[in-house]
Image (cartoon, rainbow, N blue to C red):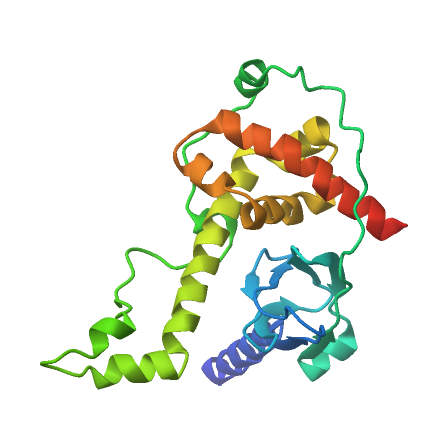
Length: 254
């Protein structure tokens, strides 16, 4: 009888625990550019990206906050309300960014000497995206994307490769690998250049650090410079792009 009671308690606990989080289905309904929009769960650091039609899925709990980020749209926060959690569905429309200002004042703590500024930054070895709680592709891609020209030759026809081209499978695979690579770089940059540094040096609000770094990764060659340890150029890009990013923020607030 005691064992039966313990089993019932265990099953009840397991069921309750499983209900703490769900896979939320969502859709971004902008008039255009609905593909490739990043979604970050700021509570758990889970990450997702919209597909060709603006659809996405992400693990959430009650009262979590989702942040939607894109180069072409203003960042938007969406709270997982009880209604959204119960329906397991959320529909979001982002506002496009149109106007940009010419100048914005940065924080006073940059000396202007990149070598001096870089020496103040504690740099660690690059981290794996799993250390930051972000999903991503691990290892060398196992599946080779066969070029369409190679799928049809005089001696053979690769039916599977042709189908994957026509069905859009290879296109989605390329995009997924691109997004995964971006996630790794964003995670590493956030660890090496934390929100406190970005706020003090470039006046980026702590709540916008993820969105700012994602903006830099999507709009510049910062990823390449970071991989090659060209940290002076990384700081230079932060300095230049922070002006653009803060212009976007101020334009949005107006």
